[in-house]
Length: 238
Image (cartoon, rainbow, N blue to C red; front, side, top):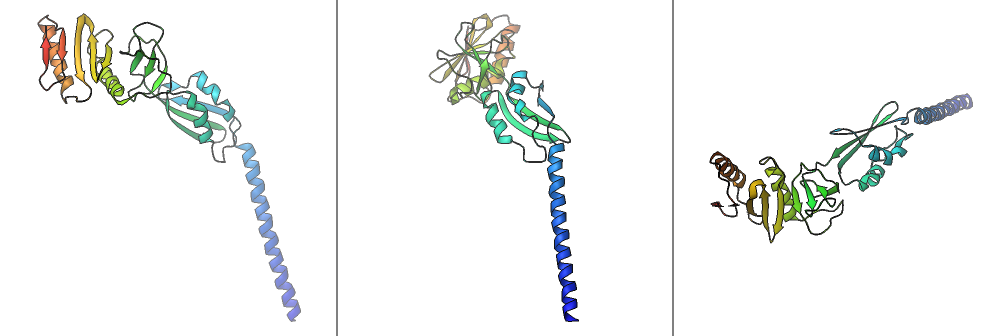
């Protein structure tokens, strides 16, 4: 009797183990098949301005056929896209069953950097990151004697000057030109107006003061030669 009970118990244990192994095998089988089904047949790439440029899409074409149920190759994509300094952030996500989506934030050019001559300018954003070669006439120009390479980052004074030129760019109709000399930013407006600012100690209300002076000068039809905003009280020279 005891041997019969022991045999039945042993059979039940073997049956449970067998059923458990079959369940594991079946789960593994479904998982392996799902990886064959859920892979990236479509690759979509977007920025805040629309579709990604073809040169960016071409560098990540290898993402096609990526398994979508496994960890996505975020780091590999970031490494490949480092060649494009205009890309600020990268997000990679899946859209099942067969689409991989790449979402990019693109840096906005704020100024051009370079000498006065044409053909030697690069664009920079308001964080001082050099983006790419550009001759956009709608951007202010910050004069540089040295060549700067895309991907490099400017120093604190230069970044501050970029932000100032970007903020000033809506005041005149024509291009602004800026030049830094020993922490002093000279901004050359149309009609031979020069604005001076001290990058090492900016006054808090310099922009409002400049707006008032320019507006009053236009009303009076008498433009100043120099607007010195390096001190708490501006100095205007005609």
